Length: 209
Image (tube, rainbow, N blue to C red; front, side, top):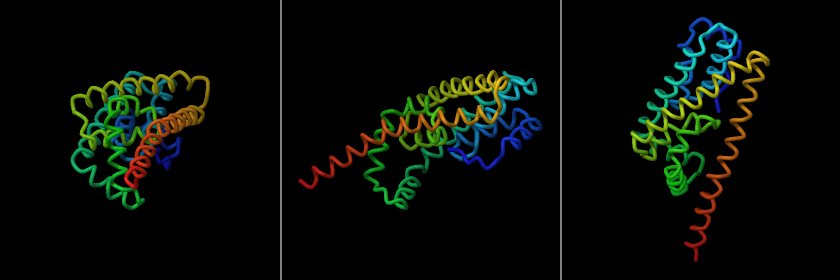
């Protein structure tokens, strides 16, 4: 979930002034693990391309390059010291390390899908790279999934904004995409968290017996 502390008007002005660098840097920082409105910035880029203010192919290239670079940086941050940081954060919220281990194991079994499709999911787009590093996903596999996912996601978002921007407002496009991302997050949470909670509860019951 991005921190939408920057107005759409401000993002549009930044994109008009600094062009493709705004798209590249915005999505790169978000994919690094920093909760910035990277997705919204890419939508703005596609929207401006649809109105003829920016070039579609350059917006798309900037989005793909930024997404790939950001996720790569996030991967190595997660691989080097991400687990220790995650355990510390978990202790603050009273999440036991054993629970985190179960979640880590489950994520590692689905890491390829998470990295490839995670960009379409609110929150997971920000943490997919660092989590892949934490679970020590093989780098070559990560790189392939990262590149493929970045290309598919960027093409979908930029193209959607490019064509929809001609018939609806930018605010409507951002709202629709955000709603889809939240819906995807709910589905992922149900699919991944429910079995993890069940596993942990089942082990606790067996240990008491």
